[in-house]
Image (cartoon, rainbow, N blue to C red):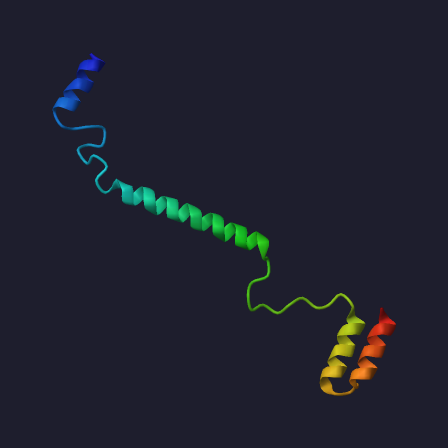
Length: 90
């Protein structure tokens, strides 16, 4: 009985797609695949660079060097004084 139903469906011109025969359904496949690839790219980029672009960089581990850098930027230290003090810290 099942085989005869399948034969009847083929001879009637209707298949399992209800007559669409895949017509516009490939748009769904393409769209879902695109979304899947974009999701993977988004996840990989999020894991690879946890700091977003344009964000303020984290402070240096050595606070003394950061203070020296600020003083040098403000003009309180000369280049020679700055380099000498950084060498002393290391």
